[in-house]
Length: 115
Length: 110
Image (spheres, rainbow over the protein chains, first blue to last red):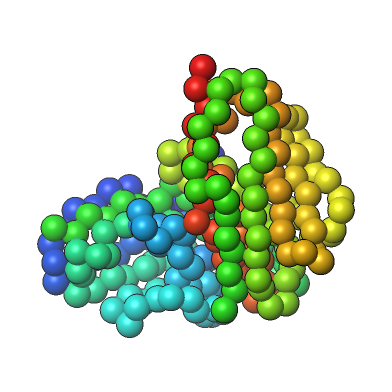
């Protein structure tokens, strides 16, 4: 158990809909990362937050947005869903201080299926 | 754009065999290289490498980094069926952003 909690574990929805994925980082970790893993793309970095502020942005679509709240949990919002958004979405956390080179701790992921 | 390439894409071996997984990378402001094992869901951390030539070892697994040639290898000796997984290599840049390779799928047959 990494200490990172993600909900829901599974989600099935229709095209055009909007969903919210939630992540609680390990106790004490200030950085939260979101990754998308689909069969043909591997793990793709979406976005990073550090202590409530956006720190880095990867290949995140404009239809997607995220935020990190004062209690450090994070939400990833996916809207106008398309079939191609079906994937496993991982949240990871780290201490994330400046100059940190260490590992990320991954949650179990949220599997999104868009029908 | 940071890039990580892993080879082979997949590998099938028998228990007791030794395997070598490869990871090459291109990254601006390199900080570290990490190896993860992904069995069913969440990737789990194996090693972090920051210096060239220093082998990291954990049981039957070991890894080494070559910062001049920009690659790393992960060795697994005396493989067991429990080693079957996808092995992911990732590089950490100055922005604390991990870029992952596509992974190597290892299957160990009894």
